[in-house]
Length: 225
Image (tube, rainbow, N blue to C red):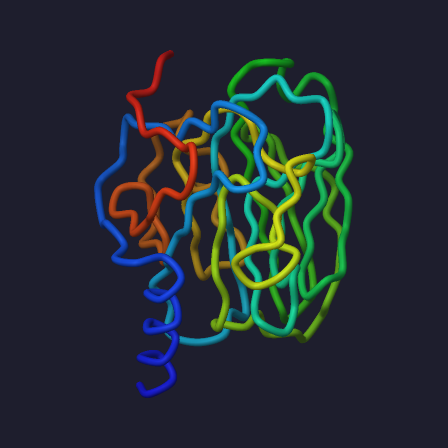
């Protein structure tokens, strides 16, 4: 309990009070390239993660590299990172080690909404990536590792140190919505949502009850589609 209270104090110092809101039907808009625009999120986990699944939807016309989901601790900058290297390539980092997935062109179209889910389980080290409900060949990394619970989640930027050291050329420009995280290795219901309208399992971070704070030029608006 003392460890959790200390972490909440650290997070509050970085971000101030975190709003908790049902954001269904809303999007975060990152209107332009920057080295400071980002969103801080808080997850409701109770210790290190042996498994996780992260899902989100995004819309962008970027062709350079950018971060989709960055989780960093004070001792490791890429504890968990979902990173679009370039069109057709997405990397998943766990504890600084990466596997890269080649996304076939027929899983999505350029400048269209894309739904991405990444999962990993400690027992086998197996990592999965699903794009628009389609699974890609599985890969493996960091078997037996536990993801630290002493980190900070950032959308819109890639953290090179705890909560900062952002690079504008790695920033996300576009719109993002339906960000969820589960303490599960794989959930086929989650991988297909929201396009299938599936009932989602209980999450440790959810768009329907999101604790967040906007930093810099980020705007919350209704989704247009």
